[in-house]
Image 1 (cartoon, helix red, strand yellow):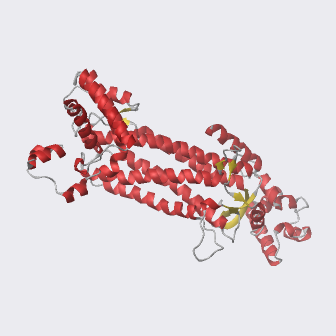
Image 2: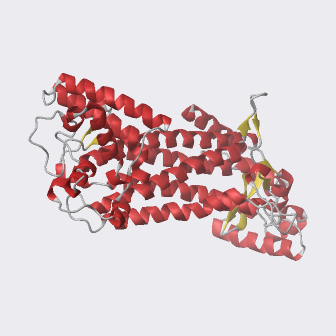
Image 3: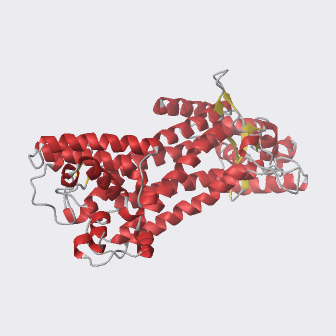
Amino acid sequence: MSQNQFDKKSQAWSALFSEPMSDLVKRYTSSVFFDKRLWQADITGSLAHAEMLAAQGIISADDHASIQKGMAQIWGEIESGAFEWKLDLEDVHLNIEARLTQLVGDAGKRLHTGRSRNDQVATDVRLWLRGEIDLIGELLVDLQKSLVDVAEANAEVILPGFTHLQVAQPVSFGHHMLAYVEMFSRDAERFSEVRRRTNRLPLGSAALAGTSYPLDRERVAKTLAMDGVCQNSLDAVSDRDFAIEFTSAASLTMIHISRMSEELIIWMSQNFGFIKIADRFTTGSSIMPQKKNPDVPELARGKTGRVVGHLMGLITLMKGQPLAYNKDNQEDKEPLFDTVDTLKDTLRIFSEMIGGQVNAATGKKDGGISVNTEAMERAALKGYATATDLADYLVKKGLPFRDAHETVAHAVKAAQSHACDLSELPLEVLQGFHASIEKDVYECLSLRGSLNARNILGGTAPAQVRAQVARHRSRLG
């Protein structure tokens, strides 16, 4: 085989070139061993394109039928693992097209009419990412449901609420868990918005300028259940906003996971002892036999940096690119793929770690986090968590809040000197700070009284927690 004949078999642009690509450049420029995961999207997009070409009379019905038959065989070969991916063919698109041509001859060569790899890859990535966003949406629902289950079971459990990691006010542990439900709910909204902008069709933009063939791009968009057609061919082939938006949304979700991880790690430590994580989510030490390490939350905290790094990489990738398509854009796939994989794995494992796993025999959930209610309540008593309640009590007696604040500061100082809680100070001592204080003050100074008092929309009272649980269950289905 001559050198030029070799090129014509292995490269889509070979007639112009007088020597084959070096092996080093092949490895450097090839994407097939990571972009082959786009194969389903590539075949699906190609079938929609072929159907439109036939409907427009650009290819014959026989060619269309051959393409359909060949693609069905290729689909089966890839699913079974029999398909041979070739480095010489550079990417998923050329590998599939070459195999199709091998199977059906000239009909396979006609498939590429009216399109370029530039609009083809943009379409494939959008189709693939659309499906991944749908799956991530389901995983976010699962995680929210796990958190709602924990919240409902712990609506009455008292946790010290912190600001600056200092004991601030008592809150319901269920209320605390629902804060994360709100975060993941916003994440789900963001992914839904990203999906809408992702689900637009670049195909038919060809290399950069559109095509002279009478394509029906709206027909292809409808066939692929896409929400619209990209309106400018230059933008369509070079736009990667959707990938950046997705990675941004994924970064925020991972940041929420990381915040929760930090709390789980702190709560699990012996100094707190608020919770236990099931053994299957922890590891031991190679030298200290007493250790149980929260490896899953720690790894999630670390993987958050990895996903945020991918976001920075994609932004940097695009910042200096002129219109239209540039080879730089091949570098969008690995960070995007890794972000998807990392996020999906993290959501799956956290849903089970938080809420447990359904036992096939009983139909109930086993595992999940175990809550040490006594340790939480003891901790809430350490930081004068009801000081604000005493200030509110005095305000209701007629004091301006700033005066009440100052009065309570003196009461806290007295409790510190006696090494006791505010609720343990004798009534006569409390009355020494203000004469309006009466016996009913002890109700507001109790942790339970403080919790129940915040019975407003968004508050931490158990009644409000249960109302929010019901709202989330209705929303999540």
